[in-house]
Length: 101
Image (cartoon, rainbow, N blue to C red; front, side, top):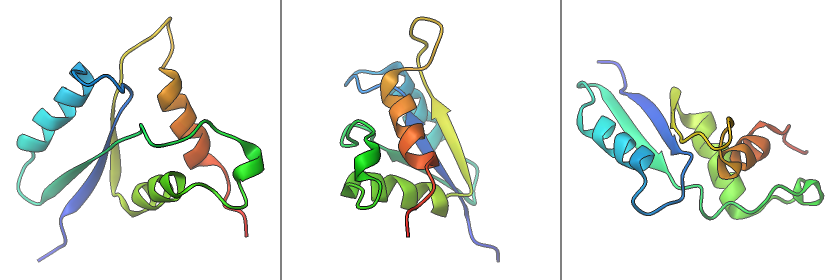
């Protein structure tokens, strides 16, 4: 038996009643057997600061760890002014930076 496919869900909205977060919760309920969906909360992630790269905040380490462990990402996001929300861009900035040794 193979291990389940693990997907990390990320909502681009911090709003408590976010439609996008609701869509991720609904998706988690509709997954086929053999899949899991974990929803990651972006709220604790601080604004990107290159000065912190050598010793990143715990929330950033957690994001990077969860992204690396996932088989896939499911991003549900609103569109603000023809772009993605700042909170999502910030998370992408943190997650995509090379790790410092």
